[in-house]
Length: 385
Image 1 (cartoon, rainbow, N blue to C red):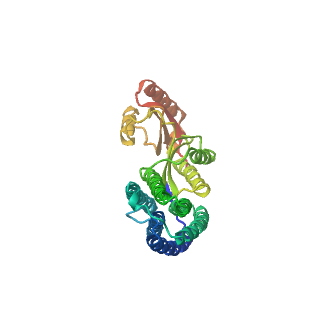
Image 2: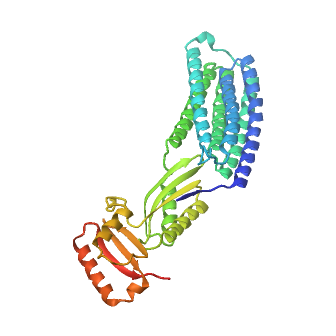
Image 3: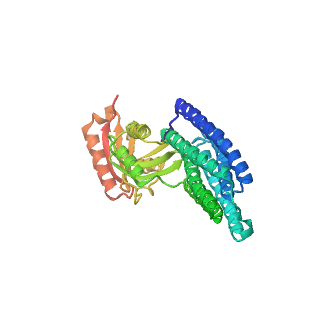
């Protein structure tokens, strides 16, 4: 059994807060991108231009966040019964790949210029001021975005925040490189450009690898799995738990579990226990959906009853062993346990009122199950009215 957890108001709040914070990032990155590339070009700073392209990639990632946030917050539908959360993960993967590619291109360009002494120029002092402004802006933007990401538990927003932090780190390298160039060590500007490019490659690879891990159904970390296990196992009526499986779905997770219950309770009671376990997991953990399978016995290592035939064949086999003229049981309950079947026959009240016939039937059934390959026991009960 399973059920979906839908919280429209939570989706709406998360969507609007993500949109708001991302638009703040858009405008800051747009302003910095123009400033860095223009001043870097006319100020002859390769490092500042590389950092400007890094800011441009931030701007592109912001628009990717806006798109992914809109799409991933759509509720589940017939074509996507688990929702659209993985759009966010896919967008993170694309962003990582684009960043890594951009970094490699910058690395190649800066490395080539380092090998040509004539390409190494003195930079204008204005580039230093712009680098300092960029450093301060990126660090403040990182702190703001990460605070929102932690509040919303958003993987993509956190990735975007770390992108801003990588820009802050790269801007620090640019400040040092430009400062060194102004002091007479002109090659330091290109060295800074190489370091910035390397940082972009590293961040892109890290983001892409993490997103790819989520897309191929990587499990939650051990601590999270242990906590979910404890929540299910402590549910009243759950006697055991096995085959607990988790996989990430955006910022949440999907959970499958097999629970062991008393084999002689009713189907409805077993369903109720499973429903309580599911509800507790949804309320306690960041889980999108839970599938709970009910087991009457532990089938983690073996399924001893899997070879047994279905109900119709079992009842036909049992009827062949019953004496002729016996009234039809009003109800038959079958228990598939430990490789054999235990049956309960609920006989009509009038028949049960005849002790001699009941005794003869019990004797015949005892002889039947002694050597029968399918039935372990057959019990007679009086049908309730």
